[in-house]
Image 1 (cartoon, one colour):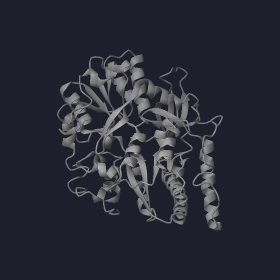
Image 2 (tube, rainbow over the protein chains, first blue to last red):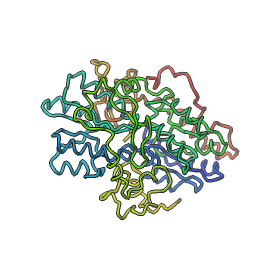
Image 3 (tube, rainbow over the protein chains, first blue to last red):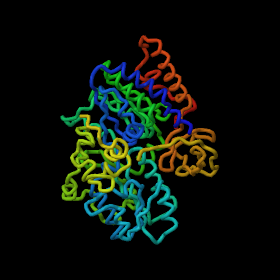
Image 4 (tube, rainbow over the protein chains, first blue to last red):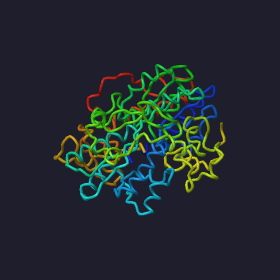
Length: 371
Length: 106
């Protein structure tokens, strides 16, 4: 497929690896922010090809992994107790809440449906005017514009039975939270390419200035990932904290103004709890009051800031916070591969296809004990 | 969750407004309905990056070719031996470059 397969060219991968080996002179920890990048690194076996000086840390860029238990519980209760049609992207279905997952709710008779685009949920609401349709709107800045668009489309169609259960998260505040953690070991970041295709790159300039770490906007294919890692390594070796765009074919410095405008028209920033990390100010999105008719929290009288009890319940064993802050690798968790497997996940990183633990379990076999 | 796939725009509906610009996009032969309202400049023949049914950007062919020219070049230079003085990892460091005339500028 054009603009995809050519970025999987083994000769180019080899060349970039050779260049990387010549570049590095000491140990560097590089965080790839996006779960899609994590998956690309693991699935293509790139982690095992990297020189020992490069240690990749898997960042919090998997919106499924960071969705707090309270939001999963809200979706499950909406599906079970409010007779709604609960629409969601597929990877949210198996994430364990404190009283089960959406998949288990479906097994108990709840109407839970998988959609590939939010617009499919809008069409469902149009086809079934007597049923309430709730779309579980999860994702980063990449997905927010399409979810916001679905509200505008439902409004244009005059629909009264469509609403969003919003669980959006934003990347820069999470990167700041990681750098603010004294334990963090991150020396450079591979920024999430598709988030930047929407937001542009300038939003990262103050971050680079403040933390003096290189940030390389990177794509998702092997050649993209290795070129991103090479660029970060060259900047680190020459002590240059710069913002560089590797993913130039898709990311324009100003991003996509139409997508930004749509997301801003429907959502506003809010305090958000990140599963395994805790509360981060201005790190989430909620519907603006003008769109409250499309807000499932208000429509069904649910308090978005549920009491900490449900957060405490989530601390159980899952060490997703440490994995996502780069303090441990999945295989270093005592539950990895034993008490915690894709069939019996203790936390979201083992369930979500973009979670670091699921990627390690599926492709690495969990024997990656590198510190 | 943030994955976006490049596809070729085959046709764009003439009936469009601010929230709907229906188009047919081919992903290696698989045709899908995609909303191009975020990329009004996209035309049939362009490649667009599609995420959850919506196109987020037009793939910049010139940038794609330049990246490949650079990648091939680092192969020859490494075989020659001495390190070149190029900017790290990208053909030219992209600071605040003016928007290219016909490209991903949305």
